[in-house]
Length: 345
Image (cartoon, rainbow, N blue to C red; front, side):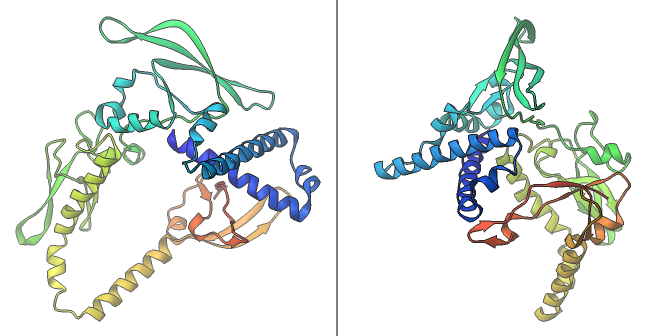
């Protein structure tokens, strides 16, 4: 929610700056004729908001204070978190209440005990509002329906997927990983040295904060899991970072013998191996656009070199085409970034 609020300010500012540059170069008429009536209305809104952001920056600088963008965004409708349960039931409140405190400080609204009912669209089939049924806790603490419908104006609706562990791969390829008794988390294992120095997996108690390995083992390779996927570290980013910090040590331990066996080699040889390894990763994992061919007015064929993705391709898969901001070409101070485009393979 805080990201949505913060980025909207950036979005309208960028839109205003680019609009003004384009006006200087090609004129207003050439800009507006490219958009249909609905797009023109959206652009007018963004330009108006961009001017308000610019004015707030100027006023804050003149007064020697920080800009108050939260007030501006709130005046345009703001950002509201609509939650099915009570605030005190949320993982953020129970596990990391500072998230809630800072969220409210930044002007984010919170509506609790609201069950989604319907999305309402305008003449362009775009969202204008959403309706919710108000819930209330009974004597047993369970939420029950009240029949009261609340309508909330909204131009964008983001659905939080929650903190359920991601075990999709096991559902798509059954038998790859062992799950816990509830089939909710991966079953945790520890990697221990067996006879002859081989690494073996030992089933651990679920929730063991020192067990990071799944049941997968093939050709001496293992798979670990962290963060929300791990029962001992699920819930917030701080715990997720702790899982990575602790888990890294466990991963390093399984390479101790291999590291020891390489100590006789000199540093230049080791560095050459490292360069070869990283070059292989770059070749296998990097996706490079080789060519783009326009087949018809509405169909473009994009040829991409992506060796590993090509080898694992399955019919029906979609690919996301988007450049990274950090690598995007910059022209006259503007990054030539693109939105993600879905491509069929």
